[in-house]
Every structure is written in C-alpha cells, then in structure tokens.
Length: 483
Image 1 (cartoon, helix red, strand yellow):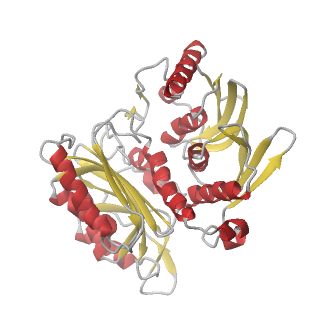
Image 2 (cartoon, rainbow, N blue to C red):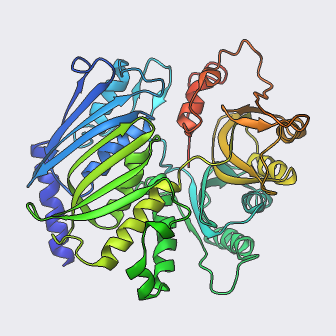
Image 3 (cartoon, one colour):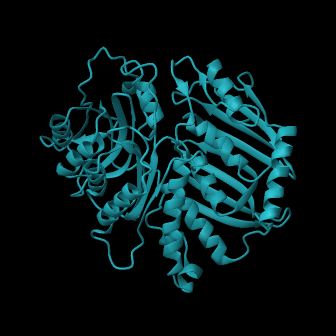
C-alpha cells in the first residue's frame, strides 16, 4: 500500500511539472475586484493550498467558482485587499503567481511596495512548536506563558482559539539566552512535564487534554489548519460518547451555540454528488476554514460556488469522499455538519478586540496575559508575533463576570504595563453612564500615521494586517511570525 501511495504521489508530481498551474491576475474584467484565475492538473488538497496562499496575504475573497473534471481543475477567485481595493502591487501579483506554482519557484519571497518581504508567515521552521489542547478556563494562557518564562523559553509567536469550553493553542519558542531552537531531549521533556501540570489543573476525570512538542522541521503544518485539526479532534472524541439516538435526532434546533450558521446536506442524484450548503455570517478567511474541515474529513470538492449577500455568506459544495462515495448515512451527514459548523464558528469574532504593541523581551507574553488576568479579563482568542525588538498582537477578551468590558479596565491594563493598546471599533461600557462609548487608548503619538485607526471592521483579525498598519511606526522590515 505504501509503495502504491508513493508511486501515485510521484505521478502527481510529474504531472504538475509537465502541466504546472497557470495563474492569471485579471484587473480588467471587474471594476471593483481582482480576478485570480487558476487552472492546473488536479490533486488532493490543491484547492486548499490555493485558498491558503490568498488568505495568508490577508486578501478578502468575496466570490469563488470552483470546477474540476477528472484530472484538471479551474478556479476563479474574486479578491480585494482589506480596504476593498484591487490588487495592483506588482510585487504582490508576482508573489501570488509564484506561490501558486511552487514547482517552478523554490524561493517564495518577493519585495512589495509596502517595503517588507512577503513570506508564508503562518509556518515557522526556526522555532520549537508546542501544541496544547484542553479545557478552557480564565487565566490558562497566562499560566502557560508564565511557565515558559520560568523555564527561560522565549515565545516568539503564539496563537490560541477557544470554542465550546475548549482551547487549542500553538506556541513557537526558542531558548531565551541563545535565541536558538530548543532541541535538547531533557529540556524538552522538562518543558512538556511543566506544561502538562498546568493544563491538568482543574481538569475533570476523563477530560481530553494534550501537550506535544515538535523540533523545527520544514514540514510543519500550516498553523491555522493545525488549530482546526486540534479542535476537530475534540469534536471526534465527544461524538465517540454520543448515543445513537442523539445522532439520529440531532437537528439545527439543538445547536444553541451556532445560531448564525446553517448547514444542509442533500443528494444530487443527477451527478452522484452530495450537495453541502453552508449559510453563515460573512467574515475573512471563511472559505479557508470551511475547506480545512472538508479536506481533513477526506471530502473532495468537485464543484463549488461561494458568494456573499450583505453580511451573509453562502457556500455551496458538490463533494464525495476520497473513495468516491457520497454521504448516504445519517451519521455521516451528522459528522460533516457538526465539523463544518464548528469550523465556521470557532474563528467568529467574540468579545472586545485589543491590538497591542510593545517592546520585545523575554516573558513579554507572560506579562501581558498576567495583567489581563489580574484585571478580570478572559482571553477568547489571541495571536502575537515578535521581530527584533518589537512584539505585536491581537487579543479578543471578555470580562469573566459576564459584563461588558469597561473603559476603566482597558485603561488599567494600559497603565500597568508599558504597551500600546488599540481598541478596534467596539462599544465599551462607561462606568459613569448607562450608555456605551467607543475608545482608542494608546500611547502612540498622533503623528504616527498608523492605518489601524482607519479600520472599520472589527472582524479583521489578522496579525499580518496589524503589522502592515504599524509599518511606519516599527520598521520596513518588520516580519510577522504568527501562530
């Protein structure tokens, strides 16, 4: 079997070298967006790779048309930048073409007009990766960061998601003294043991939890896709203990936590496909998240149409399993439905968004998360990256008491630690009045020229966007190392 798979992969690579993807960037057909047209030989996972290239650059995909027939596919993506503009940066256009055709280009790195290198910034091959899953609780991120700081590990990048009382986070660490990856087996064992003790606290008997460490390797999975896989494993574990009646009777009325997302699965008898329709609130990276779920469930997308109507996104997929079968059983449809809803919901914006920047130093993540915890704020989602002497990131936080975050709380956080805080287009509770108010609490000088002040959409959760917006303030070579 392994020999057959290896042979099949070699054939795929040969076909890709003979017929590499053709990528056309069209700025003439549509007046309000750029069309990215791709056609190439088909192989498993290539659609997700194409979408990953665009989302890693923080481009917004407003529409997409996907079609494959046998060994060939053709995709069309309608894209803009975060401000709704066409893609006109020549360096960025060249990078997109190169990144979508890696067999012709060994080096995915081009200089763009924004004055910094563009790289696949979601994957770090220079640091030790730590993956943690478990039961979420207030202060958990702070305890993890504090344990790493005590062990003299510098966290160069981190990302954490929470969903349905569960948490998954990936941290990239290096030795705090040498700035080299941690590869010594004894030290790795000590780090893992200490973190397991942190995660084990407050866990109930039989609850799923895990801590794993990986030494640097070029084959690291894309970080956000890996987060989806970690959280999907929790869903699989949960469904192992579900009774058959729950699967049989499960319906949208029982999805109290997913009111904004609907999934329907039907049989397309004419073409022998299963038709999957996902209706949800529109947001950045929605297509990527959905494709992660389908790909990891071994579902192959043959045709698809994605569009948005106002604030609602409609995604329609024609799929089969990798073995060619459709979703015929109720249990199969239940599993796909639950995974798709979770994939859409776990990145949805909740809580108050804080964009922060500060001086990079050993234990900076520990300091920031400790101050958030001490001021009664629970982290719902987070990502932070460091470069040279600067650290920047985004935190979605909520008050652990269940009330809206107040202006006084945000001001207390800013005053207690030397960080700049940007509250992104959210209404805060003013303790002096019953009405809400919006706030921008920052130590930045007014002449900084930061584009972050122009952000109008609070769902644009991206470290890359934050670093671009901070470009004039930090440096032209500020590189985001995200989760």
